[in-house]
Length: 372
Image (tube, rainbow, N blue to C red; front, side):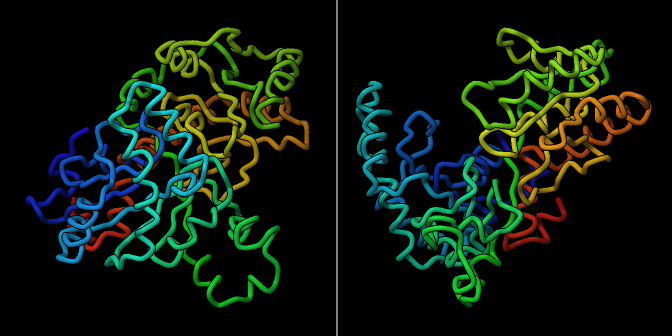
């Protein structure tokens, strides 16, 4: 996607963004103003971005200290470059898949990312971590010192739990929590969303407002997933026994059919998967179906507010029938929730909206971002 003047793009060499890591956020949504370098063993996710190397790293650091970047964004690899899994996976995604020319970059770039811990970089600098894990691995701790803020997707309500198994072999106790150094690090943690792909907003939004043909819709992988997701078939059986019309496809749908069926339902059941934050919450809202989410377990980013933008059920209360019956008893209110959810998701929860918000909140030239 190419950024326009509306996104606050400055002239060449001014107001640029430096993005280093696996995540493709600014380099996709604001490509014209982003210098992006890839650092991951996943060669299949590179999508044309150059691997981080010694020369382009040196040039990027020089440009940063010359003040050419409004914002520096670092997204750490899942494994450190010295981990055997990183090396073996690099070979798997290159040599074994015919990408022989990418093997060197896939092996070396994660190592160079770790070299950033020794290289001074100017502020503002933010870290982005968007994996399904609630934890922050030990090889990522240096970013808690280097970054202005560390934005994490699956951020537990108790932020200290991100350090389970890394800063402490179990859950950090009083000694760690009273440490000034760790208090300063944890204070930098912020929530961030997955961001619904901006290029899909038109397709998902096009079916908004279509005629409703079912009460509840659900489609998703349940076999190898969270315990909350594995309960979905049982919940659907309860809803059907209670007389609700449930759309539960028994085969995988292509995306146009999936989003149409979602939009045709008053409510979309959206239990958490590997992480609580997931695309289904957002795409249902954009399509005009009210998300029925399992109880949040994380500190959410610009959340769909329960009762205003979405519905919630508690798996341990076993009362999903009552929740759905109460919601469907007032379809005018349910329609108002769907409208509010649609507007909130389009305005705040897309990849472009997320990129703009990060730049507006943390970029050096915030006044320019605000003006656009």
